[in-house]
Length: 97
Image: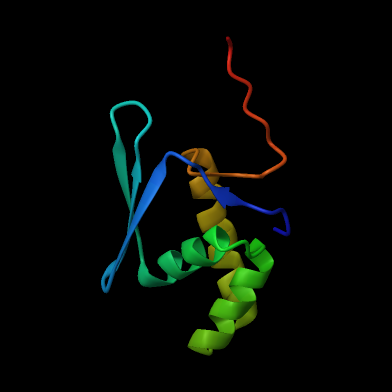
């Protein structure tokens, strides 16, 4: 989980007291909802934190078992990847001319 991840440039974020909403503007546009903890993870990734660092910071902030947070954030990371909402900076997306 130490790979650097960044939100996709076509994903827009709205933070609320109830959680975080993500709008993927590719295609027809799809909304995704994150819990407040998931939103905190998203924010930390967008600020350049590694996923493992973000997990540690969340565990410390909320006073929960770091292993539990790491497992939950790994599952969230997998879902974000599956929907194309995040990518590694090393992953280049080539576009045809």
